[in-house]
Image (cartoon, rainbow, N blue to C red):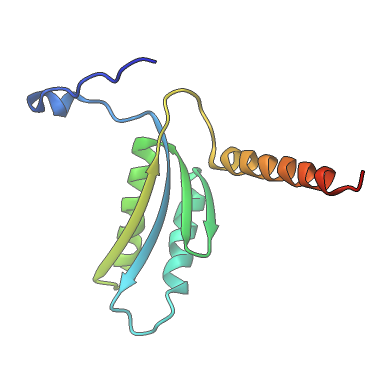
Length: 132
């Protein structure tokens, strides 16, 4: 097993490249709207994401976006700008960012892998439960 490389000295951190690809799961929350519903703002963000050409998957608690680091971070910033342009003065976003360097793997592939494991385990359990 390779031991990790030491971190670079702080004076050189501006020269550290960002990972080439990432996926971000983010939840954008307009703060201080006149109504408890934020569906209009979410719809505006979804239109932006679809127009970006990036792979995105909306779910009940946010959206997962995949692409190059710079493109993904840019579109999250643009999502803030879109909601501000709708008259919302405060926007809060929570993000989880994933990267890996050993291989390319989409969020969909990650989910498929877990589903495969669950199916295999269920099949094994059914075989184990059969009377002998």
